[in-house]
Length: 335
Image 1 (cartoon, rainbow, N blue to C red):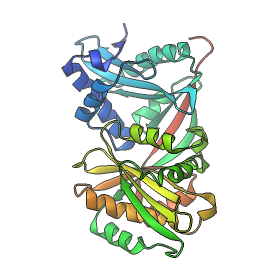
Image 2 (image 1 turned 90 degrees about the vertical axis):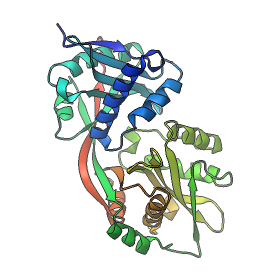
Image 3 (image 1 turned 135 degrees about the vertical axis):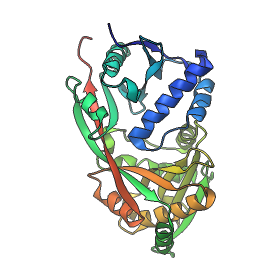
Image 4 (image 1 turned 180 degrees about the vertical axis):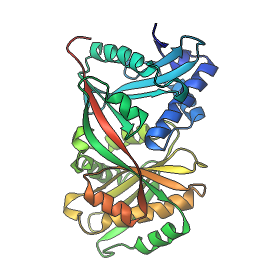
């Protein structure tokens, strides 16, 4: 007999207690992977407001002895390639090593195959029970090794960022910074900068190149703030053209959150190697601290092969806090 029964989980149809348990377990698992989990209550509110649809599928695993939810999973198609499903699968610590994850994965791969996906990707902490679990998947391969980095907003780091928050060429560049939506005049050029995110080493494995216009920027902003998170952007603007040429993006889950998440930092090719990334990241640190006094840390994930960005992060006070793997599981022809 399997250790758990796996069922589709529909947040809008779930009882309040079941939704709370599912969200708490999902948030706990996300914390293990990235250190920046959504708050369980905020996640529950977000899922309640989400329309039921087949694009994102979720599952719950219930212990066959007492009916408790002991496993959660979410599978969504990657925006750049609908044939790739991105999986988040978490099992409660007390229920691990009993086959719950394996039972869930069997159900999920059957669904993924029927939905036309030919592979599943996921991230797991290196040297963890999660890595041991994924290594048992037939045909699994490691795509990337990613370093988790953390910036502590202590007096030393903030003082150092004040020293670095100096424009490398004030005659050519000015600073722009916004909370939420990009100002209308800057949205198109900000989009052009974001279209270069796939230039980073290994980024093509997770996203495809695409053109960003102002409408695409608004769609991205809505996605980044769908959970209620605050979106913060710091950008370098070329004085002659008035266009954004470099930008760095962060989110904060709530106004009183202790941690922020640093996302993409991008510089247009012809403006690279001028110190713009270090400048705007130092400025972003100071503005995050000013706007959200409760922040204690900012976390980031960087491909270990991306030496330039690792160097920039080190300069503004980020230090390694762990490692995770991007892995891929191909779907067999028959499941």
